[in-house]
Length: 168
Image (cartoon, rainbow, N blue to C red):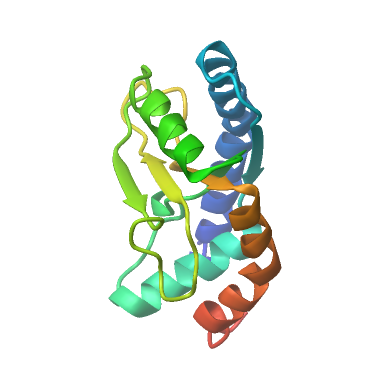
């Protein structure tokens, strides 16, 4: 008989396999789209959430909602960051991406309404649907270089505040 831990590890391995396969293609599609119509400097980075972070997020959400939480439900398994020069560029990139064949399922604008932590960006969320080429959730953050620098400098502190109480 398999345990819950074994089932969770199997699920995480499947999620990572799907995400690794799709993250680079998603990044290439976005880069291609922007190269076609956005004629200012930009950088596109991608990452797949690490297995330890997936375990942590699942545990956090199970504790918060008191019910099982699937790794497939994490909204930023695939993370794409688009770095541009100005806030006007952020909005232009958002407008460009919202007109592509990949429909945006949700958007959070923390430039207009910054988070208490100081985080600022526009985040676009893509949720998998039957037949999609990306079977996992993806988050695309659009931010300036200064915003990206701040995130890189403070992300570990944020994780500690949010997830520090969870047993690893």
